[in-house]
Image 1 (tube, rainbow, N blue to C red):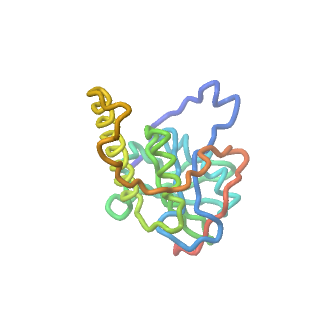
Image 2 (image 1 turned 90 degrees about the horizontal axis):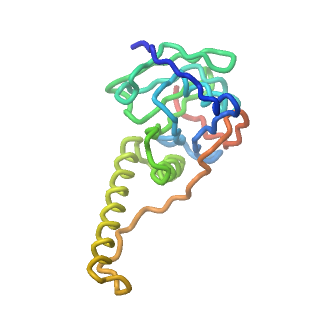
Length: 208
């Protein structure tokens, strides 16, 4: 697959570096299925990868290759110029999770990030970033996306029940039912300046 996607920076982009929306597992944590999450602003790898590698290169060693599943990426370039070098881009359809970005640093290690869809709401994105960087979790990227969708559906249903309850004169009275349990996670910082990385380094013990 080749890319012909163009990206025209806005005046705001030219005035200040964009915040990289990412969370990483704590430094020294045991290897897991995911090392964190990345919330890009578009599905344009040419536009999004440079800011990602600007943060990760100093932490993980120079990122030399990434792979994606083409299900959610309309165009996939063979190579993407980043800060001072080129990142090769590959793709796997059946072998790679549709919501996963695999990154390789030559001679150093491999890392896997959950890719949060650009249109995701801030509330859901915060939950996903916290869940993906939690070293105690063993969920795949797609499983986390399914869980986030279920939580959104539950929250929407709760709001509907409360609106009906209030419209029928139940305001101030005892609520009809208790809400279902929502798994608790600690939300990470959502914004990281691409020009000034301040994120912990995860365990790089995964196989190449």
